[in-house]
Length: 189
Image (cartoon, rainbow, N blue to C red; front, side, top):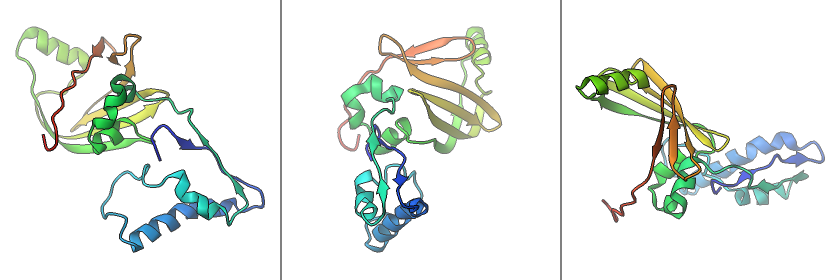
């Protein structure tokens, strides 16, 4: 399903609505059986399109439709057509149909000047060190909420887009604006 489409609620005319949740399981089981579904855990929000369900709807008294009223999230708006050139995992994170979570490990390095340390404190950055890292990306009405956890240290902010088409990240003490410099890295780069 393209990220700017989402299904509208299906309506049952003869009480068959209870069958709807099983349709995705049927489709995915068939793909798995036919070797068309790769193994491994991943977000499944884009695994099936509305058109995949239509043959199954014909056997049910169900009406369905699609709508394009989902607002584009910040990275898609700022990058425009360049968004499609991003790697698929990056596109999924920044145009989620639901919450996306990434985990890994990271090292926090802070500047040594008084100003750098003060800004880090004001912004709520974690102390210098190595941490397990988790970042949650949540779509919220045309904005993207990021909740970052560095070990026990957590802070959140919302990404938006300014009138000048800049990516913005306001927090309690400042509002940062970012522009993108697009550098084509080619395949494998």
